[in-house]
Image 1 (cartoon, rainbow, N blue to C red):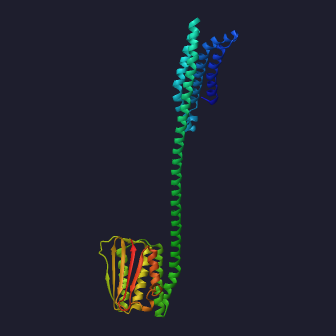
Image 2 (cartoon, rainbow, N blue to C red):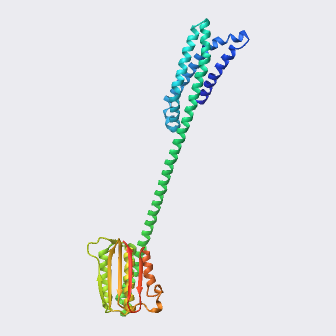
Image 3 (cartoon, helix red, strand yellow):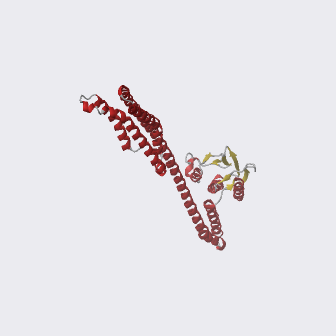
Length: 365
């Protein structure tokens, strides 16, 4: 029912019993004469008003179901409240109709006694009705607060999910842009710089210039592979590294012993990791050829606890004593360690005069 109907009906329920009691106790015979009819017709009047109000509210809900659908939780709470409130209201209305009919049919002492009984019963019934209404209101308020908290929780979950999705989309977009830019740079290197280096290799009359151009071309191709290449199978990478290392050491009259894992490994290396490891191998071999003075070199490759481990050891003279404690400053050691760090690995160097140099590279797979 609308609020104004609730207030009007409640006001009459409180006012009519008080008015009836006041008229009965009035010293004026003319005023007291109104007490009897009021006792007889007040219950009927209140009962009929209550029934009409309930019928009006029910009819309005039947004709406007769309309003309840839009109202959502408030409509549901209103229905729960009316469901609890209606039985008691119907009981009071029924008692009022029955008492009013009996009061109208009786006369004399019986009518007076019934009027006195109604004077006590009606206020008590209205009090019970009011208490139930208050309890229903309090319960509905608690349920509404609970539903509101659940709604806020669901909204927070959705907001968190949306933020996570937007973050993932932003990262994906950034990765796509980065990949596209890498491919563009790689294409520029290959088409422009690569073509010019290849021309120098084939047209230069100087063997040294041709050799340097060939090395630069190989480095350029390696860089392009790191920018655009796909992951490399570890066995294929080991084959490439072995061929290059053994060939270069052999050309420098250094005996090379290569030890690699069995052929049943299935690990792969990202293209970038393959390029960085290749450059570490090249730097290490260059140091052995230029500075070690050794005649033998052992290269051991293995997979240990999910890491790819490379140990390069020579029998040369070792790093000079004047560089002791400052290994990172000479022979490209800083560059090798920096490349290993970029792959979340490490490169350790151990050396001493007279017992050669050991380079240990560890890369997580």
